[in-house]
Every structure is written in C-alpha cells, then in structure tokens.
Image (cartoon, rainbow, N blue to C red):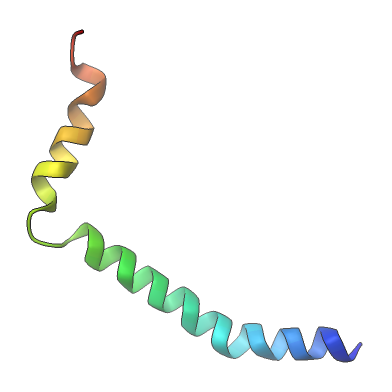
Amino acid sequence: METYTAMRHFADSWGLLAMAAFFVGAVLFTLRPGSKQTAQEAADIPLKDD
C-alpha cells in the first residue's frame, strides 16, 4: 500500500503541475504568431482536389 500512497502524492503534486504546464504549452503553441497560416492550410486539406 505504500507504493500506492507515494504514487498518489506524486500525482497530486507534480503530476498536476506537469499537466498544467503541458496545457499552457499547447495553448501557447496554438496561439503563437504565424500559426494562423499553418492552421488554415491544415483545415483546407480535405477540400483540395487532386
């Protein structure tokens, strides 16, 4: 049971911090300058005729 308790304490502290940092990083990556053109090109892929 000691391993479970240790893993739970780790997840409650550092795991939460890691998930929050990942979320902030994903948002910043999505909203970075210059990403609008890349997102538009990706959105237009299904509409392109070969």
